[in-house]
Length: 239
Image (cartoon, rainbow, N blue to C red):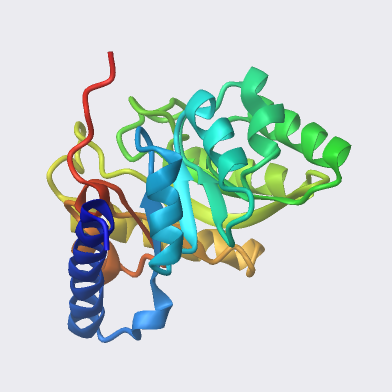
C-alpha cells in the first residue's frame, strides 16, 4: 500500500467513525447519511484512490479544475457534485460531468442549467443553496439565496425541463445571527426543507456540514455531509 493510499484510508476510517458516532448520538441509522468527499485542489490520482477505497460521491467547486479531473476519472463509478458558485458561462462544461449541482441560487442559473440539460439529454439534480447570512431578498457572502427566496426558486427548478429538484444545501455562515451556531443554522435548514417538501415531497436531500461541523449537521438531520480536509488533508493555498 502506498503512503498516500494508507493516509487516505486512515483518514476515511476516522471520518466514518465520526459519522457513525454522530448517527448513534442522534438516534439515526448510519445509512441515512451519505459522505461526499470534496476533492478540490487535489489530483485525479487521489480521486482514483478514494474510489478504490469505496467512496462513491465526490465534489468540486471550480470547473477549470473539475472538468479535466472528471474526464480523467470517467471510468470510475462516481457521482460528481458541483458545490461552488457557478457562473452561467461554465454551465455547459459542468453539466457534462456533474449529476448534481448543489449551488443553485438564482433564476438565471436555473434557466441556463435547464437549457443545457435539455441540449445534452441529461437530467441534472439541483439543490437550492440557502444563505443563512443573507438579508431579506438578498444573497449570501458565499452565494446562496436567502430563506425567503427558497420557495420561489424551488418551484422554478421543479418546472424547468431537464432539471430535478433534489433539496437544499447550506454552508454554516461566518456572519449574521447564525455565526458560530452551527446546530441552530442546520436546524433552520431542516425547517426550510420541511416547508419545501410540502410542495415537492421528493426534494428530501439536505446537504450540510463539513469537516469541522459534520456532527452538528447529522444531529440536525442532514442527509449528506461534504468532507474535504478531514479526508484529504489541509489544502495548499491557491495562488
